[in-house]
Image 1 (cartoon, helix red, strand yellow):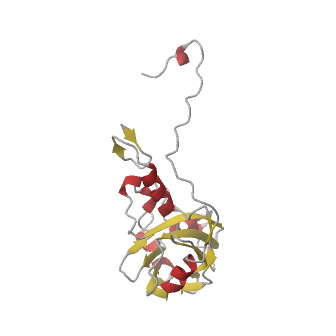
Image 2 (cartoon, rainbow, N blue to C red):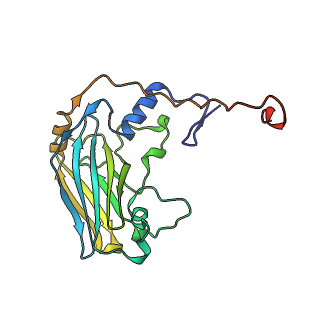
Image 3 (tube, helix red, strand yellow):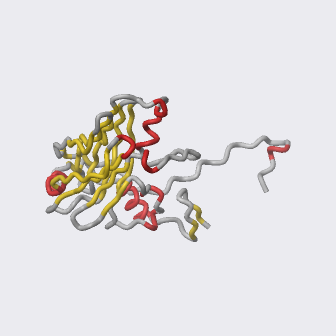
Length: 225
């Protein structure tokens, strides 16, 4: 019986092909150098906050962008890195954040496929991957109390024609739901200009670490039962 990190139980582990497809959806291909799309767009702002996207880069399988969040002043409740808890896709365990306080980001393609920060795509098991489903995956980021930049990965690439819609809502900072459209064809065209550096490595399921050594005698010498 195989139990995965995603809580999936099955008779067989995912195949190398399933693992490769899952990794290709969760992050940019590590054998490519991306092409710049040349976009920096302010998605919304109020007197006390601003949200935009910068550093849009395209790969053959999707595109990456940076979500830039800026505050004019830090509310007392957001000191000590509290801003991160309102922006990211991953809510820390045991912390209840009201929906109106959270920064919500969504993407919609012209064919109707959509994804948002309310759904953590990484929790889908490799065997459940749907290559046609739009994925929005938070990767890394950094910042302080008034400035945060988070990197997101989107896959697949948008269609060659039509617009890509970025949907933003952050009621706490005076930003009702709004939609900003950009040229999806420009992102798709940039993806065709990414440089393939070398053949991709086939992803495999991480191996379990070896068991630690046991004393030759005493209680700890016996394996668990």
